[in-house]
Image (cartoon, rainbow, N blue to C red; front, top):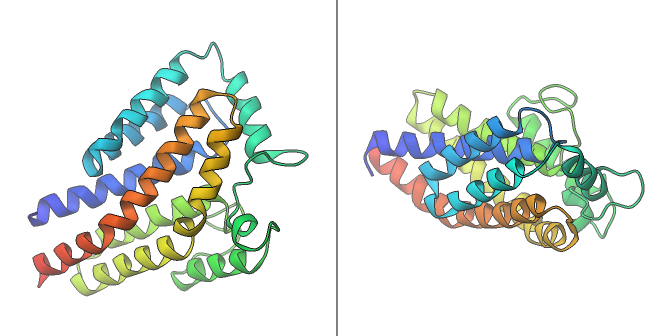
Length: 216
């Protein structure tokens, strides 16, 4: 992979994370634009996963309005009442409670790179959308720097955060989403999220080695 291919692959990864993160917020009028962004990102980094984006687009276009998706989103992720698929890492890693040690540890990752609570991220540190958005942020920082050593450090941060946080709880979370969702849209989203994070965990060591070779 040459340097331009390398940069394009990372840019596509960032767009995929950005799109996935947005899909874990309440459905809005911008949903088709988000799905198009996601599809383009997947085609550029993990083309084998792009059909999931096609399925999401098809499910979205079958909706007369966003009411069904909003109802299912609320029941799965928002409440009130018990959540069908709690979207917080601490729920899975801290014995079924939220705002636990996992939450604080995620916050520490953000603070190290200058992100503050209530600033760039408005939701709990271990909310799935926040963690996915943080991965997008780290990729953005990696691509913005002209220093190969700094870029490598941002890739190391990506691997460390991914393996320590979403990579540890995405499977039980997305299995609940797939099982509990009433709208096929969220079943597909759960399956895509699980497979995307697994693909990232498998690919990041090789991507970092390729980047270091190109800049070495």
